Image (cartoon, rainbow, N blue to C red; front, top):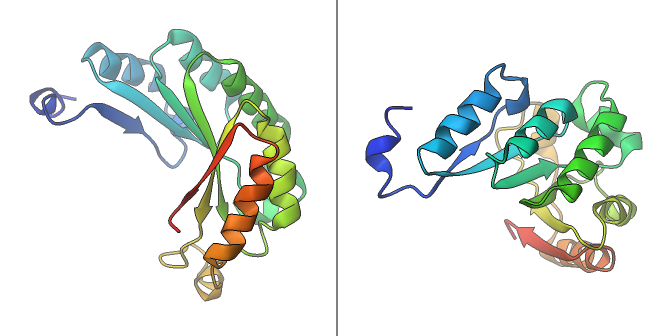
Length: 177
């Protein structure tokens, strides 16, 4: 934390990210300390811990939340590589949408894991008042070597995905295209 103070003239905000930062036992104190120093605070989360997310949002120490929605619930285990309680993710989505802070949901468009029907379903979940981002999949430095062989979607396909998502969300932008 001491390295942040001398950099206040150069840094506007701090992103708390991970792994999953809400599993960090002192996340509330960390966010409060950063906020007290005068920085904006962004949280990147997978939404798996709605109780901690709720506490962070209630504390008003978080200025922006970005939550990854990897795919539709039916494919989540495949995308995450383990069992996921999707009910917890739904709770987090609802908490974020009900908060008074700024937020964005995002999906990395990995072929096979995210297809047109998945974008349509996820964007309905994000809702008309939500902000949504679709991110181009990059097959470098993947945890599973099989994904290094996956060819990313074309820009045209991602533009089509964006247009579908825009029918159901407040806004949708593309990242990495």
